Length: 85
Image 1 (tube, rainbow, N blue to C red):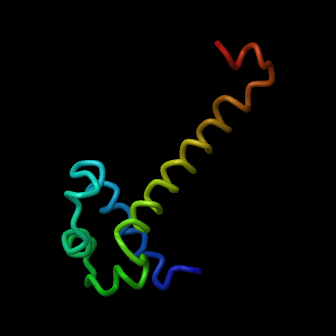
Image 2: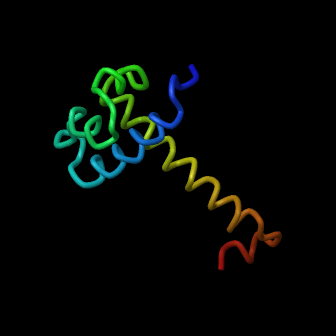
């Protein structure tokens, strides 16, 4: 499903990443994320079903960034032996 508001979704994900990283899952509050992202809590729920799905989206983005960096820095090296060094 496409995001309803891509810029709002981006803001929420950026704020959520900081909150999850600094406060952990239990310490992260959706009210605080919504307030810092400049949206109502209801708007947050338009983008993410719950806190777990928001965390999953944050983790998916982090893993995608790792995959991109790995592809650019490691897979771009032609020699398998050189990849190990």
